[in-house]
Length: 79
Image (tube, rainbow, N blue to C red):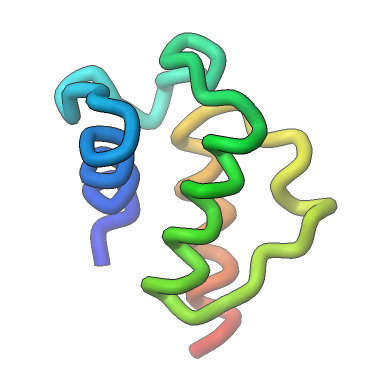
């Protein structure tokens, strides 16, 4: 599953952010994703990929790329 595509789709649907503006280098603050919106995005991954992201793993994420790395790591550990 393409993590970037999941993020782009979620942000388009829930925040009307165009997918082409979301890259791994995009900082969450640049696209006005606050902590509540970020948790919604994390929950989307948890439900789609079937894992739980520990709070201490997500607290310092600042970019889309950092989220992708974490999600892929957690998804691979679950397999």
